[in-house]
Image (tube, rainbow, N blue to C red; front, side, top):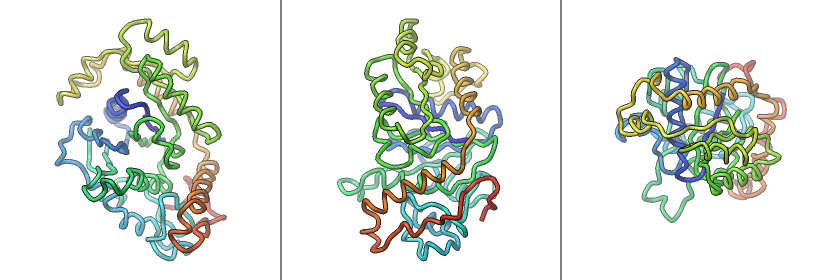
Length: 318
């Protein structure tokens, strides 16, 4: 199952993405944490140093395209693949198993049963030239091809605010959790995200954060209704973890643990519709082909779409 953490800058989404990753890993659930935020702080939040981070996915985009292309006859050359290119017959479909080549090349182990993948920071040559979505496009392409199975989890720390809508990456998740402070600005980001996601089959829920008093939680309940899954208050456990000295998760405050339980219950109750999921992949590929990619490639990239193919558990991994 795939879950994204979104929210305005400073809301605590990276902190909660890391906390949920720890929560899954400490219960021995296989989990891939993906840092798709421009600030690239998820690895540090998970206890790694900068020198311990994996090869960024975007840095190996040429290899990734060639790898995912496999022998798909609809894609004559890997450099014709774009971020929305859908898989088809002959494509190589990565999984979350220990032998997967993408994980071996682009992740490092964290927290026992977890692994970390990063998109990568801006390079000097990117500044003033390239937008960050050129890097998150590698994550979108990877998730378009990924065959994750039951009992496996992908946790993605997304870019802040409505910037997530600059690509189709926001549709790649079974559950999107918006982290909201108990303020008008926090709730406003939720309303903006909700409006932008309308019509795109996005399961959007809210996790309150930085709750200091009962009135904070009352405010979120009044504003958000059933969209509110739970809320986290002030946490000595989190402060200790952010200083690099995490304690056993059993010591997390019970109310905060209950909020994580609620998120997992919501995620596990979701059943992915692979047909609808792939339909969204194809639709965003058509949009990108018409908007810019056909002109850049000098050919109609909608020809990459295999009308007879739908990914899912029954498809053999290439």
